[in-house]
Amino acid sequence: MNATVKDVMTTEVVAVRRGATFKDMAAALRRYRVSALPVIDDEEKVIGVVSAADMLAKEVPLGPIDGLVHHSEVRKAAGLTAGDLMTHPAVTVRPDDSIEHAARLMYNLRIKRLPVVDAGGGLVGVISRTDLLAVYNRPDEQIRAEIEGLILHEFGADPRQFAVTVQDGVVTLHPSPETAALGHHIVRKVRHVQGVVAVHDRLSYPDAYPIVAGPVL
Image (cartoon, rainbow, N blue to C red; front, side, top):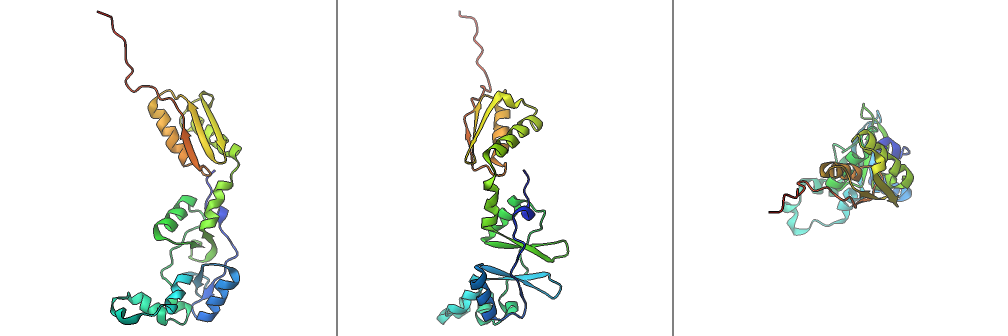
């Protein structure tokens, strides 16, 4: 399985125009239970994103250390419209991007939702952290079949020489590969099969340098 963003994204997106007012955006966030709103232009292209965190800047008094506050935070605190408050350019993904790519962006940038855009920058969906977790709904039997296919087609090994079990997304591998290198390569690949929660490596690895008994003197 090679699930992409389009397989798990939400296509019914709540977006706002650059001129949307603070009250309009606050109402939309509450009504639709979302944490951010893509901002689009007249051609439906994404030009930025307004998050609840951006809007909360208005609630935080700047106090006596205003000079130390980042200029963008001062701008947001005074903002009245989506154009004032939005973060731009927006971090976006494409429908054919991998789930791993979207997850990496969210994790590294601490983003909860990403607009999904087409080749022209038009808004076609949104993907959230919760959407990404959908890959863990794969049936155990489907995961096991993919792993056995991987062992056969990518490594040229007979899947019957391995015992592959999957329980609630947790994979257990045993008994013994032909070489230690083969075993390590298979385990690394299995960890990246979509839907795998964890891998229990129960393989018995052959000695890299087997001891050869010599004559007794």
